[in-house]
Image (cartoon, rainbow, N blue to C red; front, side, top):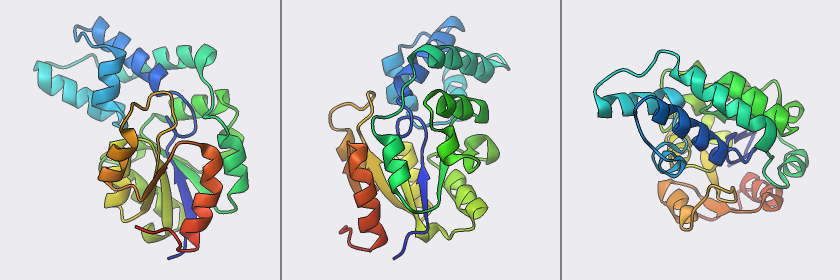
Length: 226
């Protein structure tokens, strides 16, 4: 096996944003008659696109949410980003140390991804190869976004390595036929998260971005067991 492309998830892998995003999502849903805490949003919707999360809530409550719900969530998230968002520790150095093509495949909207990476000082390291679930029919855990990213980058799925922090993300990448490393070093990751990522299909898990360049080298050299 050889690796020709490293695909990064964004939230929880590049930027430590999941706690912020969950707070914004919970605030908006609660305001529209669906009381939920940020902790509950994290458990239910981690790694799920906003469009799919909306469908889940609407099916549960039996009514439509406002047409501009995603815009409201994005506006609240971006407001929090400006003051609170930080990159995942050591991720910029890790990106720079990986001598392979790279791209981003995120469940977020293009605006949210762009703003988050810009606030964290990472956008120029990865642009323009940034792909959003809004570009495909089905978000994670479906494989569509990962397959789309690989096609855009002109790399076969089996030669892609995905870095993910969520079970839906790992599931989608695995379904796409890609090798997956599970990252569990974000502030949102609870105890036992590494085990959940491995159960979903992550070949190996890690919690410190300083480990990533060597893990990528091991996978590219086909020395990763399991």
